[in-house]
Image 1 (cartoon, rainbow, N blue to C red):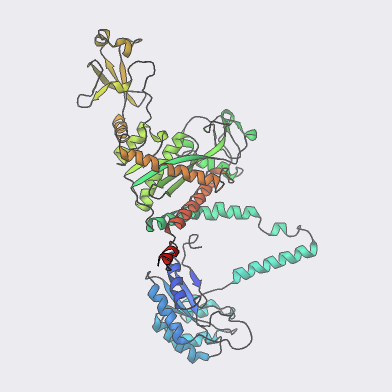
Image 2: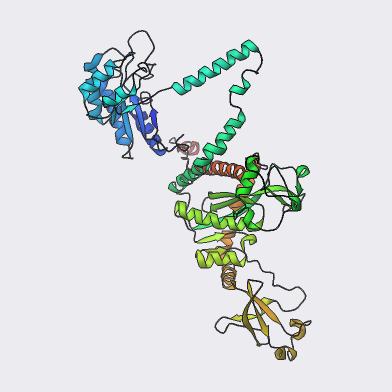
Length: 557
């Protein structure tokens, strides 16, 4: 509930659930969960309902209850957290004088407010108490019995808060009883079905009300913050990877991508279709590639038709994880299309979002070759100042026995390449194909070269392309020769272990929800579960050590 709402929550804490030790623990736990206040009442534990008719109910010892309030205030670390003391003197028949005496004692013990309760159908006792009490501290009431009193009366007498206790719950119970009675009498659902919400009503609440609150994302970030506070995240090294999860889409009902029409009327389109249309400009989906997929599923158009698993092709989404390598905590999770361009763009987005949300920027990033493009390496090295522990995508090696680009030495000061025969290759500065410069040797040098047949046997002269971001690629190549790179490569396996756990233990091999947001919800909840599992395993207290003498020592003695 605390994660789902933004308003303050006041918890009904009964009598504090025991003695002062229980009260201190209650306050600490409520603060951890960002609860605003707790209300405890001065009756004996275990308590009984205030409106049960019969003998007068016993009250707790006043000094003992004051000690419980003091214990709660001593355990309090958040200055905004409040303890409300509920006075049951009117309920138990002790009268106004006792109510005032107890309220003053509780106020002196540290209570931030007084809740005064009455079982009468009129507010006379409450108003008499407020008149005598004045404004020593806020007064809270629960008009369960005197519900006919207009709220303006409470406002005029300066009451601070009115709690309408359990009316929503009681209304729900009444509705269920009525439905059960009708079903028993009529033995069919004809007069019931249209009057009660079905599963689609809850789905609409999740897709509309809860979607605006971004509830699942907030829960995930709260868990990450807890892991950071527990010391499970160092922020020194991150690893990123993606895994394919099958979408809820059928090949038999798909259509060829060339026949797919992106236009659809919003009022008739399905939720998955509306989410697809909204994601066309998203770097993780529509904007990742202009290539038309071979097949598209009308029920989930954002799902990507892929054969990347080297088996039968299927519709899938990519589940992207960004983890801290210290303990394998997932610091960000995102759904994307199941293509490399989308996964790389998502990795950049997750790194920037993690820095913005948690102020975490890694020293190095570990990833596989799919993230080793020149553009990505340049973004890491020159823009983000992050060491890329990533193998470089390099297709310059030749297998026909001729010299590869690695056999040519680049002289950065002179901006030339030096060939194996110590001749120079120059560039005109023209960018070819939008990403590379071309360095050419002189034809006269190649004609007289003894290595021509090993260098350019089928062309008049040799040329060597150089990427505009080759400097960043050189940085990655140099890092790949270090011991730190080998260590980060081993740490990167923790991402693969998380995906294996996701599919084998959590059984998330196929999505149950459709659309980009459906995939995002499932991936986020799975990441929450994995982080909580890791947190419980690493932060749990070790078992107590035995205090008795070991058996072998006793035999020796």
